[in-house]
Length: 101
Image (cartoon, rainbow, N blue to C red; front, top):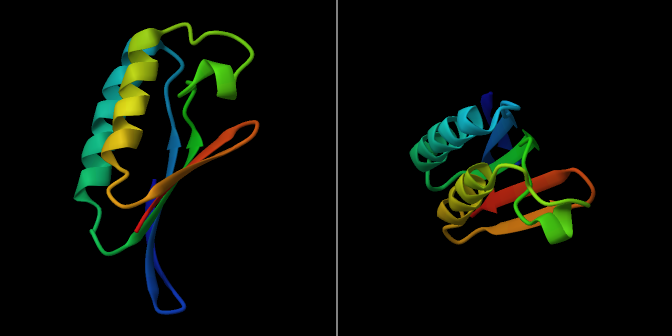
């Protein structure tokens, strides 16, 4: 789900995701998410959150290794591709926020 809003003279896009549980479906989901993020207005602040059903970094974000490496790689690719001038915050234990300036 994507919601565009204007907050105190700032255009913001809120993107909420719920990724599939099955690994191969997550890879497709993340590829589509990358397309959605690429299509976001470049001057909006984009805030991405939700349940990714995957960890970006199993050492930092989990107490076990990611069971589907392709999903993890796809998620890292989406996050890296969406960081044009932005920052990523991992808010333990369950949230990854991507802010794009």
